[in-house]
Amino acid sequence: MFPFPFSAFNFQNSVIVILILMLIIKLYIECTKGVCKSTKRLDGKTIIITGANTGIGKETALDLASRGGRIILACRDLKKASLTKDDIVQKSGNCNVLVKKLDLASLASVRQFAKDVLENEPKLHLLINNAGCGGNNKQYTQDGLENQMQSNYFGHFLLTNLLLGLMIKTAENEQENVRIINVSSDISYFCRSLNFEDLNFVQDRTAGTFLAPYKIYGTSKLCNILFSMELANKLEHHGNAITVNSLHPGSVYTEFGRFSSMFSAMMIIGIPFLKTPKEGAQTTIYLAVADEVANVTAQYFRDCKIATPSKLAQDSGMAKKLWDVSETLVHLQSNEKFF
Ligand SMILES: NC(=O)c1ccc[n+]([C@@H]2O[C@H](COP(=O)([O-])OP(=O)(O)OC[C@H]3O[C@@H](n4cnc5c(N)ncnc54)[C@H](OP(=O)(O)O)[C@@H]3O)[C@@H](O)[C@H]2O)c1
Image 1 (cartoon, rainbow, N blue to C red):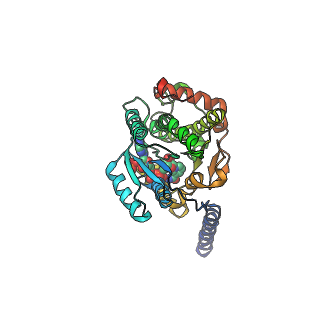
Image 2: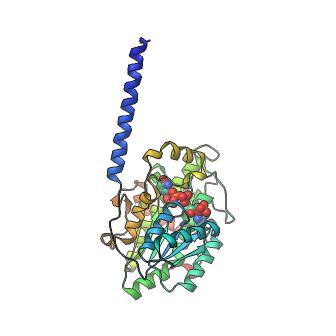
Image 3: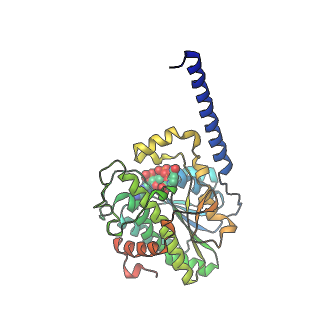
């Protein structure tokens, strides 16, 4: 339509505009990245991190090990976890790092892990529920729960309940602030409803469609936030010095894309804009160590600041209902219930 030099000029201009826009976005991301500045030591503190063999969990473990904590890497693949442990010990100079088997997609494994911790650890100061998978095709575990829902949410719900007694005892005996941190995601904003009759997506209308795995992932991450809110609420009524917060780590270049071709493609295309795992771990580390959040509970964080989660994630009625349904789905026994 236009003579060649003119269209070429337009093309050049378009490329320049796109590059400038990319630069502005990059600058914005760089300027808003949260960094944990606390130099707090964690000597004498026991810390559990789920999914700590890679990505954000591994970077969190390395940082907290460097602060002198006793770090339990709670992982499903013992070989990978053992290599990670060696790397963390070497880089941090802290030998007090151990691996324990935890597969969140198995309620029996969660119970076995908790039993091991309760028998062998006299105290627990920090529980970081970090493990997660996303975008996997719908599949069911041996417990009859949807795999993403169980790995990201139900497994952590059960684990936290089983370890609550030990954490409360630690808080009481040591007059110490004890913290529970749930790694969620801003993808929870896309979850527009929660069907308590079908939390495992058995009858879901989108089943089998391209979007189904992402809908399940978003739902599991919404559940992480609602769970944090309700647990914080229950603990506050109980008068204990335990805080519970959730967070979005940012968009981070990790192995997370291995579960789904769409996430994998997004990670490759988005590389220039993604955080490194170390940057992605900053908000978790901040919530674990910073003095200014010692008494902050039931909040959602992004870039080391309080953020507002979706409307649904602030619905306390939903949070209560989710707790009750979850107790039933993980078969929480009366001797396992703290509240
Ligand atoms: N990366 C991002 O952009 C991003 C954004 C928002 C939120 N997040 C959240 O951040 C957390 C960490 O993700 P990441 O990016 O670090 O991903 P990652 O590199 O894939 O690490 C995920 C970790 O979770 C473990 N895991 C998955 N399913 C498990 C199960 N059933 N039982 C025990 N461990 C299990 C993995 O173990 P294996 O190595 O054995 O698979 C791995 O250690 C996740 O909760 C994720 O939802 C990430």
